[in-house]
Image (tube, helix red, strand yellow):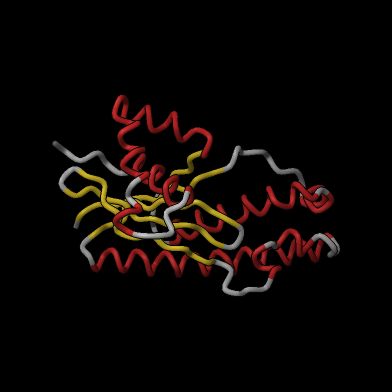
Length: 200
């Protein structure tokens, strides 16, 4: 089995997922897809904290817990599908890199529900953690990388070749087609951080 790594950049209710490996020393994309993890188009599923802000605190806690369980279950199933497809191609997923925000510590739920900016922050944490738990359910090690630290991390791992690595990632979209936005590019860079460097 050959080794590959996943990278995920998370949005409310979904994630941009890529699977990356090396072929003859070059970066190769094995998969790139949008992974919905709400299982429904209901706005409350994709923005659970927004949906809970008018509920009583105890009801809000139950609602968010239920929404998280559903998101985790859906994400775990989606990841299992990706892992199985890659295994069918003789690739073993050795880890998953999840891009993180700045890492602001959230206050108690009551304060989150009372401040609109915190609703968005909490939902970001919610869906990143749903993906992280889904990886754990599939026995895939998770590496959390703050997006703002990605540049430094790339330089630390690849040294002088980091700019070339970024340039190669920039143009991978020519081979796999659209979408190839900052979601896929950053997720790929994060995945490369945890993918073992090929032997020369």
